[in-house]
Image (spheres, rainbow, N blue to C red):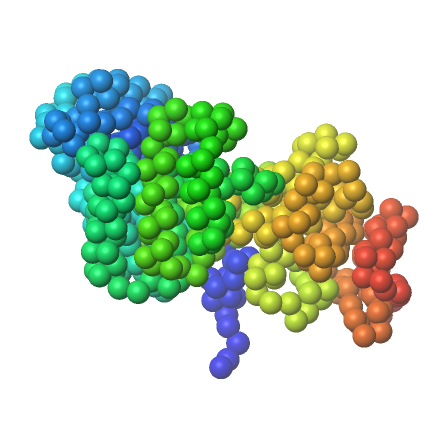
Length: 518
């Protein structure tokens, strides 16, 4: 194959033209979505890099529209009034933000209630908002697309639990396949006659039918929905897990069984307060726990991941051109952050080329984090110098970033911490160091110190003038080649940072200054 043109390289490279600058992406730069569920009504306004959007505004009200519907067949009267009032507020907020028309979707409660059409007419009359009532299979598809927003190319089974229903969707090679809806929502289970025994029998019967339709699903199980997230919070509490970020939190069959038992044997009010879960949500957790136990027992997934992305993010994904869908959400978010907040936007690309020789032979997953760190290395420069290192660490470990496992968050955070600080003792990393290995800790330190040193040469374009690092791991030799243009930048502070980098590698140093004629 011949060499790629610069345009082709830009198209496929994470350092190519950022798509958030394109007209199609800008059209998605601020999008408002309202989700009217059986238990809650929520407005989310997405903003920023379209492939990995920030939550510009997020407001939820636990209305309980589906409460008691199993007996009456109608929306809960109090919940209906509260939902209408919330929607009036949401429309007023959208007007104030000068948003394009809100996208409003309703799921099981409005779909199944005999007065659902009447409620939709009331909302249209009072707010001007048109509600799109989606079927169960469509709800499953959109939830799966929300997962794809955060995990491009994902495969496995998506399970979205709402108040009145539970949906399953199969994903393979980044596409949604078989899907199905069921009545296994906790609001309906709460109203089921027969007590615990009756619920268990009903859950097993329905789950067996779901398994027959979906077939074997041995890969990852993605859990979407507020009740699953509440159970994950309880699992974190039970395990003493230190990083309280729900997205990409992992569980397995054993931990699910132990947490379900923990929920059954612990005072719910004490759990609610310890985990910061609302009263309305906590009242449904025991019913959702019964469903989760049976779900895991039936499908036996290899592992379980919590997804904070669901139907609302799926609606945003629906509007994306394929070119945008194919981009890495982490790298796009980092590109956006650099363009918005760095002192010298674009230097991340030069810094990446400079430090890359230290990571020769490293797998693609780690190189991806190196790229992200280079893009983010300077976005927190406005923080007070005494707190800049920990600000970087907190941003990486707790920011709303897609496509990052918890261990990768900690690795990225530690690298950025060392961008501003040689030592990590006494920092917040100590609480999270158990989430990465000693080898990963050492690699993150090397990366951070390489960023710290490379930033001293930021007026030099290493790719253009020949300034370069050369790492010889067998000889344990770190060589720095400087040019007449970059040599003046190698002052005392830069020299000390280079020595610190070499010490982290256990290496000797060699500094070569090329002459003008070379």
